[in-house]
Image 1 (cartoon, rainbow, N blue to C red):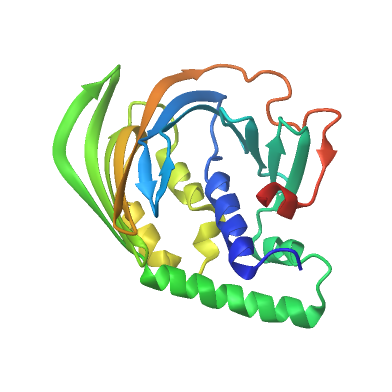
Image 2 (tube, rainbow, N blue to C red):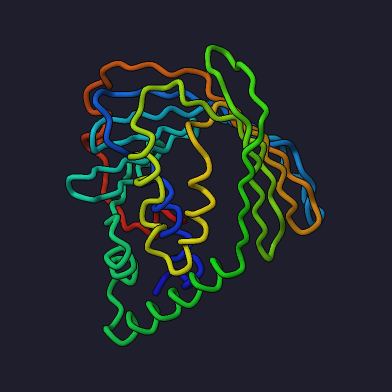
Length: 259
């Protein structure tokens, strides 16, 4: 097999997180957001600051996130499929959003015995990862206006073996979306991971959509600071083909997209 168990688990988690971008809505919603990560030096290597502007389209049963780096991520509820698109290489890969099917597809041409062993290992890893993760969400009394949105502040602290992450999140409920449906779907396939219940219980304390957040992560003794800002939200028809694979793109194995 081409990929290690760790690499395959990372792909599963990545897929699950993007599945959470889709939830039932009555019309197309367009979000534009900007993210920034400060420059950081770690293990003698200097990583320059990075900036990205991404767009997210949401329709009933469909979602599409377009990253500024030339990748798109699409989820279609009707087929329960997740699509990763690389516009730079004009390639795409597809993966079932069903947890068990995901793992089966990523095992490729492995034997039944290898698949069973890998599934047990991935389950053990998932349990270990969730067991070592501590998440605390604290609602606050702080509120302020950001652009045209009224926001409330939440503090989320997450501790994992490799370090601690603290996020100050300013959330709004001014955007007309079914927030209960959002909460139910936002967990995506992650909800199937052993031990995810305690994470979901904490995350349910957060209400609304993020307008602005500041996150500081302590990774191997180094502080990494990043921000996310919602620049725009409008309800309008998505351009034709937003939720489709572009014509002429070559289908590749999901592990190639992972690389």
